[in-house]
Amino acid sequence: MTIWILNHHALTPQMSGGTRHYDFAKELIDRGHKVVIISSSFHYSKYSEMKDYGSNEYIVENIEGINWVWLKTPPYKGNGFLRVKNMLSYTYKAINVVPNLDLPKPDIIIGSSVHLFAVYSAYKLSLRYKVPFIMEVRDLWPQTLIDMGISKWHPFIITLGFLERFLYKKAVKIISNLPYAYDYISAYARKDKFEWISNGVDLSNHTYVKPKRVNSFIISYTGALGVANNLVTLIEAADILRNEPNISFRIIGDGAEKNKLKELMELKKLKNISIEDPVSKDQIPNILANSDILYFNLADSPVFKYGISSNKLFDYMAAGRVVIFSSNAVNNPIKEANGGFTIQPDNPLLLANTIKEIVSIEYEKMVEIGARNRDYCEKYYSIPLLVDKLEKILNVEVNNG
Image (cartoon, rainbow, N blue to C red; front, side, top):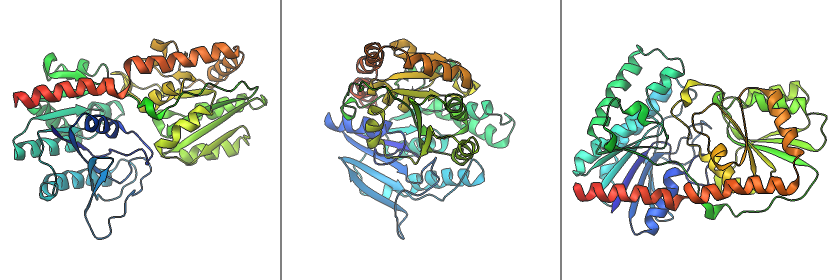
């Protein structure tokens, strides 16, 4: 098959962020398929351009066998009008520029949210090429925006609601990485039209390294520094543990809250924690392997009531380290794997006490707990297992189409 994937924010491992479709594409290519990924290179959390277009409006590259199309879109910061302009620019170019490029013709097209305009682009292209259209839901817009506090009567929300229902109807299949997404989607689509395919991890990029037997402990966080991650909790826990010479903290990433976190760290004059610039995803395994405890946090929010499917969390598990899972999300892979400690979010004292408890555990017990995370990923969240499910769906729909 030739598979087109439209994901506005698809990234490669040399960039900082999720690589779901890169990982899936690589596996599909290894199985003999052709894959085209159509994305924008304006980074959604760094708010910076990752490619040099010169005077061009697009770049076409072959990245490890993937036909990758980068569409130039205007810059923005935050979630205002300029972000909507960026979305619409991607949509317009996907529909009007991509068909004029020298790309292999699709047998099936996948349109992936976050935003629904990218999914609409995939639908329009599926009509042009007379091929099946699959909708992938990675964020439940507009419901997520409503849960974040935007009025359901806002004109933008109403528009997204109409578009959402239209796309659910037109898709031959609806895929989501959120384990309980169908609790929401069931109002618009029958069960046999829906499939859950989680995010996962390419275990070949994460060589398991047994933790060193040392008397000092590094607690690491990697990823987005946004409001939803509430890393103020981690800084306040570091403050509580400031007189523990064998415990230190690392925060590696970028996002809207970064300057605020740095200011808080400086205000408290903390020496046991560092806030570092983001690194490419292919450098993450080394950081995790040199950590003893990994911290996963999501602020208490109704946004996560349909579950989470975090690339970061699966990277943590693949590293084979003890994980502190601090979230009220309805699913909890760390609890399922028995690979760490689950605590309520937004509680610095509880976090500090949990860290002290982990540090007191015997070395062999810590190794055993972390190894369970690795084993669990191998059984349920490796990329080949997830692509087995995706490939089966694609084969059925192409044959039916």
